Length: 394
View 1: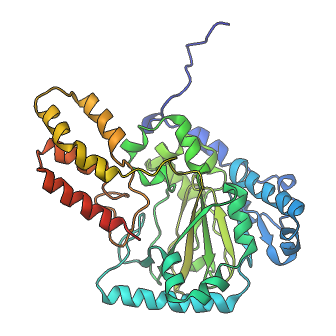
View 2 (view 1 turned 90 degrees about the horizontal axis):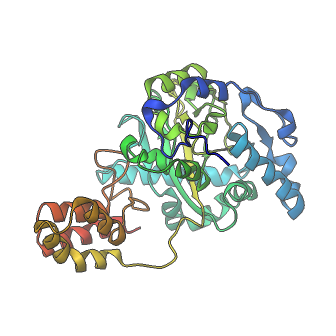
């Protein structure tokens, strides 16, 4: 067999080589009704499911798997987004949770902290990081009622399989709150363009398979309140993590996005690679509260528990000496850093360890590199590592 080297396979994606025409063609598709037999509609290319009518299907393992398979196809090969009407039918529990969240917002404001948004201007909303834990600790009974949703459980399992890891963040957008910029989400969507480009193309395919984006509506959200802007089928564009910052891709998003009104108790789920953005709240009296669900695969973990902080402290004197005496070139130094230190910002406590100068906090690996290059003392590095570990605690 002769290899065709005139069109070599793409090993890495580059922002400059992204093809807007290909993106336009992918996002010009329409939903195939044959792909969504259990949906009641596909308004504006977003499949909608009435969970009151489908609740019985979730109690039988066979019909539950059939429904989950349909949702997985949507997320992977279809529109990339679906809505579950009344996924949380216990409105009293939602109202209780809303009350608790408003108390938390007031307490955090009085304490001088305000959760910033990754993709919107500061001050246009209120954010509660780790709303999952905060609700459980402040009102355990409300937590139990609130998350007793077989529909949400099935949606998470449809994409990630069992034993998924639930996290959540409240986003409260007040009247006048401005829209976010179009973006993709966690994992690669939270990296800089430069760092994203260092990951091989197949990792760009893997990233959206590791997480699921969701949201629970805490109030009725007509279009004027700014529900999430969505571009169906945009998750199908493989280099999208390299493309989403480009002005022409964002202009296409703004010209073709769709929005669906939601009611209290509705839930929306979408592939994190879908181009999306919270909308502008142009209402005069709707304080749009959504509990943003960020669900992760059980498989996003290493095999062994490793105390990387201890490793960094132990090797630092020898590593610094090797670099200072030019016995360790940069490429070899980076290999040591990669083996020793935690190179990823997450998971962390975003209340205490917020992003600095970007979308992600500084990593342990970045601290160790800085300590080596700037000739820190061992106590200085130990203090910085201990402070980072303290900030990351739940």
